[in-house]
Length: 354
Ligand SMILES: NC(=O)c1ccc[n+]([C@@H]2O[C@H](COP(=O)([O-])OP(=O)(O)OC[C@H]3O[C@@H](n4cnc5c(N)ncnc54)[C@H](O)[C@@H]3O)[C@@H](O)[C@H]2O)c1
Image 1 (cartoon, rainbow, N blue to C red):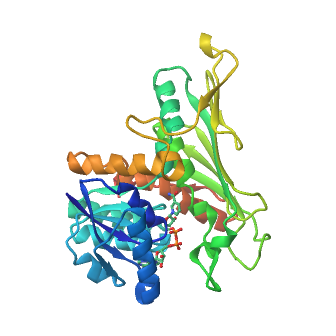
Image 2: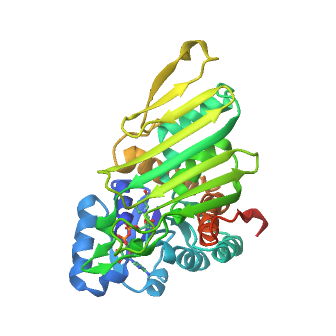
Image 3: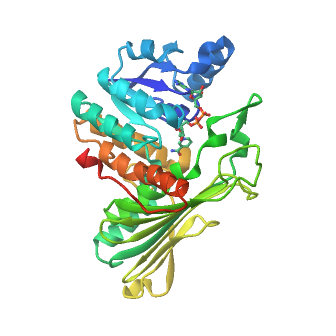
């Protein structure tokens, strides 16, 4: 039985997807907003209704860490991620951390040191790596059907201005550089490439859409990987588009793979494969064994959580460990540094050498 603790009851509510899982007990939850008893009561009721009846609630993180816990899901705002992950690791807990993992290279070094010193597992919660089409594209690449990828694009566009203010006050999202939120692109794309970024140039737009929120409207980065591929990312969190989309594009020596912004299918154009002459459509969604399309993000959230839980239960290494989590997150840190210097190239360190 894995005794689970949760930090941050917003996105952290995804933990309720483990409802009914007999390998999990919902031990304790922590949120600074529990300083307001009504907020705590409402959050506990919401979690219980979703299937995660937490036994104990804390507003103080240090006291929460004294609770008997095996695993902590950290779903607080990004500036808290590194410090809380490090403290939880040192307190002897395994950690699942939301995206991004760190806000600076220095935090990355400290996080790696904590994983090594504690001997605990660190799981980086990049759910987009678990979309079925990402796995299918990877299989096609491994089978040699696609050839060598050389240019890729990843875009995440989501008008989340409604999340930039809460109870009349600006939230962390109002001033968060979108370049930092790159892991929904770098995660799947670096997995497809089996590679990591080594250098980035990036720029931000000004804040023109709702300028009361100081964060740039968008950020775009060009990342060179160690194998020489080029990855272009776009993150845009203030625009007039309704809804949201993720888009991925992969050019390779034998063909093209692409998702569209408006269709729940991916397109493959691989002329050298006889049965894929021209363009074919592949279903988007979760295609992992035992997976289903229910739950958050088309089933990817549950597929990810279950993969992490399996690793704990069967004492296997983390499927997305601290190094891979930093491979996905550090391009955002370095892209922000690049944009602050007018688009100067910035080297992305290899966290294995920290
Ligand atoms: N992977 C995904 O698809 C995905 C989707 C949404 C959000 N996220 C990530 O999840 C995290 C949380 O996002 P959100 O939308 O729930 O944010 P949010 O700001 O709505 O909620 C964060 C929660 O953490 C609490 N909190 C703030 N500081 C805290 C602290 N020091 N200790 C404990 N609790 C604290 C807040 O009171 C709030 O309840 C972010 O890191 C975000 O990047 C990931």
